[in-house]
Image (cartoon, rainbow, N blue to C red; front, side):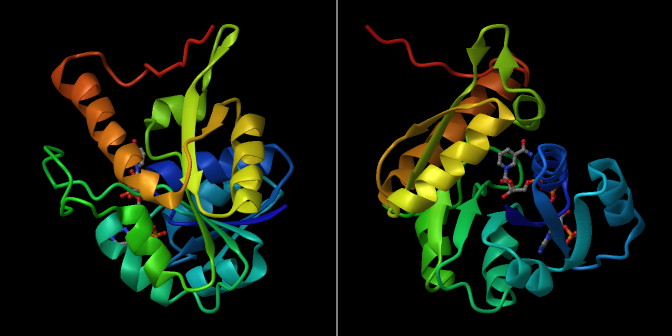
Length: 210
Ligand SMILES: NC(=O)c1ccc[n+]([C@@H]2O[C@H](COP(=O)([O-])OP(=O)(O)OC[C@H]3O[C@@H](n4cnc5c(N)ncnc54)[C@H](OP(=O)(O)O)[C@@H]3O)[C@@H](O)[C@H]2O)c1
């Protein structure tokens, strides 16, 4: 699958590299595709990866993974060009700079705002509830880290769940895109547990059932 990963920071470099290693064609989108850090990310990702501008990466791909800071997301999305019919996976959390909370009003979510900016795209919220150490390796012995996803397109959610499963997650459909409000709150809870309650960044959640 042709996948554009927009943003070459912590999340973008890990997800893009791992998807390229799985055999997908990954185009890293960057504000400066020739920057040394981007060249190094592409090198680690191997022969299935390359870098280009954000717009060229998005244009070449069927699936776009948005891994930029939420507060740069509107400008980034508006620079991507036509998105009609593409799957856009939103990993963002609208975190306050000191990570003490989300900078959103009640009843608002980054995921829904992003869908409003990304006209015609099928937006799926995913990967926002896990830290980068979990993204690097979601497998815990025989268990897999829970990855909640939500969105309004069944097809886009199936594509996202397949990619997440390939990476080693247990992807679970949490419903429509309005559920992004709760997935983003869950990210806040993860941050509290990791950094304030002292659980560290290597833990993941799991659903028990009977
Ligand atoms: N870090 C985590 O553990 C984690 C976990 C879950 C979700 N998230 C979410 O995932 C997103 C990415 O997080 P991250 O930790 O990967 O961030 P990061 O390391 O700061 O990387 C973000 C990347 O976005 C690109 N970018 C585009 N517009 C930007 C702007 N206006 N300002 C800064 N960078 C911009 C940059 O790549 P170029 O320079 O190549 O354009 C940058 O490297 C965030 O929304 C975050 O809330 C993070």
